[in-house]
Image (cartoon, rainbow, N blue to C red):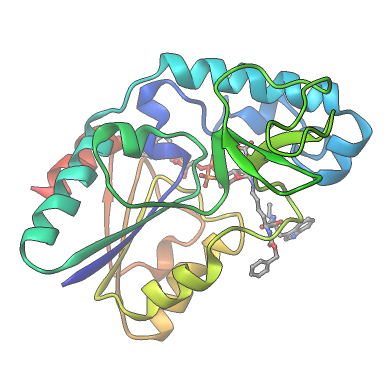
Length: 228
Ligand code: BJW
């Protein structure tokens, strides 16, 4: 049995990383159009770097929670049975990896990486980024940006994700509001292909009607119970 799991900010909420659209979410305190678009970065790179530097520091202080650990265990268990867990995350944190997941597809990029806008090289970066930094690969000054996918940009690994969606027996969505495309469309895509769908979330998401089964509660408990 192959399982496709899509995770969102809710899976990392109990690790202390904010979600985006809940009452105290990041996008209720910060304007995404001023921080998470290519145009915002072109206009005000300092402000965008400051925002992501703060998020990078928060991430380095956070730890995986039982939901991340349960998904890593599920990947290992399925592997023993010649089945597969395909884990796609919209999150830019590395908590799935730190919990032990071996194969994680980051469709919205990774906070601990930077990309050079001149030569496209991607490298690990845990320090603060700034407009004066030089690309370690091509030497261009001022060309590094967070390796994340902003509004209006094409998400990463879409061909691999599409293929995995076509070869799965179960689609599971965990801790995502289902409001950002293309990820929000995966459940409909799965359903149209006759794949069983399951939602795990604190409360019903925007797409709740499209799920065959649902478990509502904090991810640390609900994901661990579902994996058991
Ligand atoms: C818990 C819990 C607990 C809480 N336990 N659960 C108009 C203008 C411009 C663009 C568009 C437009 N209309 C449509 C678009 C397209 C746009 C889009 O969808 N916009 C919508 C807002 C309408 N999408 C894009 O631009 C994407 N690109 C694109 O479409 O390219 C063209 C294309 C077309 C077709 C195929 C392929 C490509 C790019 C989107 C990039 C999103 N970027 C961000 C920022 C990343 C960097 C960063 O982190 O700063 O990604 S935005 C933000 O939202 C982040 C997230 O990954 C993403 C999804 O959020 P998520 O994870 O769902 O979080 P929340 O907060 O919304 O929900 C949390 C959930 O957890 C809730 O349900 C809670 O209940 C739950 N929860 N605690 C369990 N303890």
